[in-house]
Length: 229
Ligand code: AMP
Image (cartoon, rainbow, N blue to C red; front, side):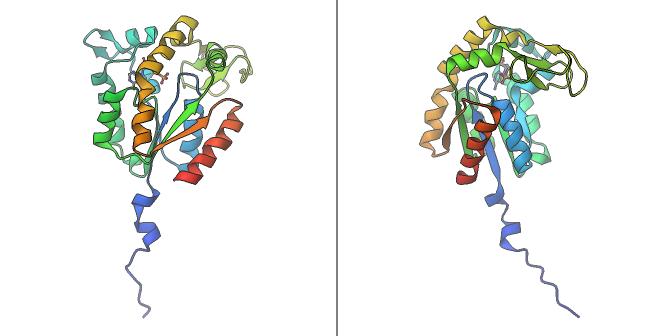
């Protein structure tokens, strides 16, 4: 009889080295969602976007109104609500080998919350010029039903205001309007930017130039992933 070894080869058993717990930072309009999707497909890890999850739970009550009230003004939704949604998502089995987080953490408090739950392997910061951000965001249209993103100039839908993927209505998000974008950028500069230093001190931070086409940015992002993970 042939003896079968019960030993698991190190490369298969060693899940730690395969783990990819990734955070993508960047101002609104940096293309976090798009790059996160690509990372998610490439490594087969879930893309977790707090903005998307919050849009799906807009009516969740906070102490002062609903999540929607904050999002429409470009303000951060209170931590208690965001943590509830995020923690619930991170508990799912599909995050065991990793995840790519988009829109979280937004400030130091949230970074500490995450640190208590998961050890990170890489933090990418997408760097984009302010004028480019305005062009990208004011032209962005999002499907109300499936969340797919379009752009009136860079990725117009085949039929105006109709989603190519599911036929749903394309909307201009309230928080993609000029005054609100200014507000969100200010919020990013004050609260989220300091996180770069926090993660740099931990040797986790990699900056990626986010200007240019989706494919150009993806090439640079993928190169960073390959070199660091
Ligand atoms: P995003 O799609 O990441 O641009 O997020 C859209 C909006 O959702 C933000 O302007 C906030 O109002 C809210 N939001 C998303 N992520 C968070 C977070 N981590 N903490 C608080 N609010 C958030």
